[in-house]
Image 1 (cartoon, helix red, strand yellow):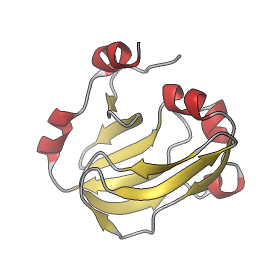
Image 2: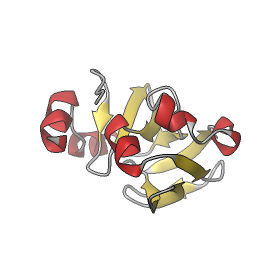
Image 3: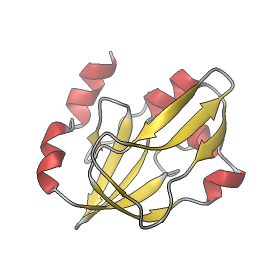
Length: 124
């Protein structure tokens, strides 16, 4: 299982890369391996606003369907439309296949996320 340094991780197995006031969010390698072959990802709408831990979309695999949650509050600034045609890319390259970007409303919410070492322990 791959865990990248320098990212934040949520209890719901999303990775978070922060650049300025924007967070890029995707599904972790651990999550995609648990889900199995991903066949569909429902993306949020641009400009929609969410609170931390809100469901912003869904991810479906041959095994299960589950909500995609946002670990941070804010407004959606970008979605990875490539996932509509190639959701399996999350299985192949989970850290390159981001799901959405959000303008962070409250940077203090980052304190509730894990660093790579904590996430590694969390998944063991």
